[in-house]
Length: 103
Image (cartoon, rainbow, N blue to C red; front, side, top):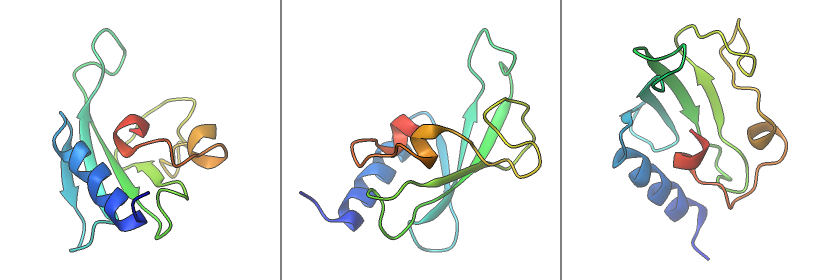
């Protein structure tokens, strides 16, 4: 099994090689922004959404913190803070989940 830092690097690299735009915050790999387009045939089509992701030191054993930077109206997003409120992130997180699949 790989160490948490190797797993963090691997998950971040997969995310950066995907269709998402990733912008690092500071010099570390624990905080970054991810920009993505709204899905086709949805009310979000044509929009570009930005989330801030914070990975705890114990990632992947502890879940990331994910929140929208720009306003989005969705039942799983807190309107005031932008925090994503999903069981998979907040309660049932498992190291089997990857960053790309979570976002």
